[in-house]
Length: 237
Image (tube, rainbow, N blue to C red; front, side):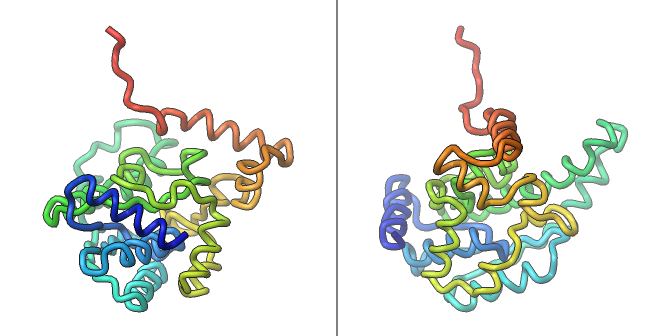
């Protein structure tokens, strides 16, 4: 699997007349796996960006640990100040208080997207995304944030399969075992926000079965996020 994915990454880069790959390394399992796959595909033409934005300190340490273990070049792009500056110029009167946290949280991955594409433009690289099939199926991405990428190497792998691949690649066990989180706010976890576990989601995607309440929540997220998986609508005339 690792060799096939690395070869696929090479083919995508060659097909776009690019030179290599840049990705965001967050300290989570998905980005760690993608980073190692990209390193295998392009030993001398890969760059991992560490982009803290009021992020937990442990995430940054985990990202550095992966980069160090696998000799992946990194660049650190602190986004805290940019984030604050943008919030300071947007009037607080726009929108309702109920939407504030979501809007502010989604701003972080959108700023990271801008940084990644700046780096990609400078180096003539492709941007590799770190989403997996489980996340993509329910739209657990930020539109024009972590969902705005050139290639998605893990796009056909369930979260369970990503964990298995991480173990095979010898990603540090502490990263494999820690609760998945997008780091959007203090204490945020993927499963807490989704309302079901990755195990339940993976089981449903594989078999179509599960507890009725879980299936209902999954299907609601699938419907609500359909716009993220479709091309941008244009008038048919």
